[in-house]
Image 1 (cartoon, helix red, strand yellow):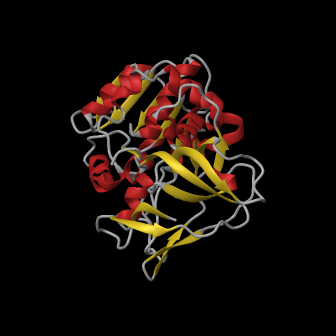
Image 2: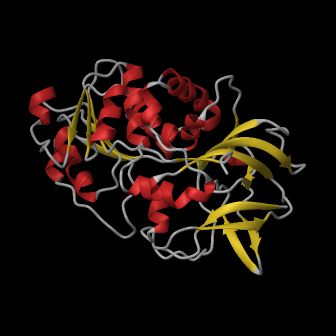
Length: 346
């Protein structure tokens, strides 16, 4: 059996849309028919060669999606055939089956434990979560990465509660999901920073009480404007090391906490003013918002569905798999907050 896939053959070049041969399933693997795949900034970094030397070329891409189980190895117990599942790079219960190799003519195409830029994909059992919902939509792809990372950053890493304040730098899928969770928990104010007016408008629809374009306005005075002594929390979701360096300036002395979510290019470093740490401020990292798919997915799904009208402009263009490069360019050009590939489109 073959499947159409958008694969990375060379960095800094468009993906190639090809047919690859699906191998026989190994222990711990399932075959998924993809409904939708999201495109995360991490994939843009892979394509642009910003994650370091790529020793796996050619390879499949993608780490968030939704689909159904069409085949499974006898060792797989957590799902059955025809189950709807969320695909995520965040590990859950189940067998870690490792990667797989597809055939493309005489060449091998590498794939990790999860890939989603293809109509059918071999996935490790611990990267899928059964998803029972009567209201499934293309937005459910966010449950694979943006929602657990962004929502988890606010709820599980920062442990935010009602009445506290938040500033979010970078309003892509992850930053937007941070705002959704902040609104759900009753934070106020919630301030969004980005260089895209469309993304800032979307942020306000999803719960930001104020939004500022970093290309047009300085945000050094936002602490005085909104919080006097600083924000309780800050989320960095840009991957920009300059933002990372200055993030602590925006939070309160003694109790202010910030979390770095964005991925910076390979081998980059940033400097922190130690006086900010001496003032009792904290800077933290996170692995997927500290989320556990089996425990947290349903909560995140309910928040997404509660905001489906507000999220209508998250992905305004319908992309087919053949349009994968257009979808990627739309992310680069900030035309889409989260490009989503619809596998049902020809």
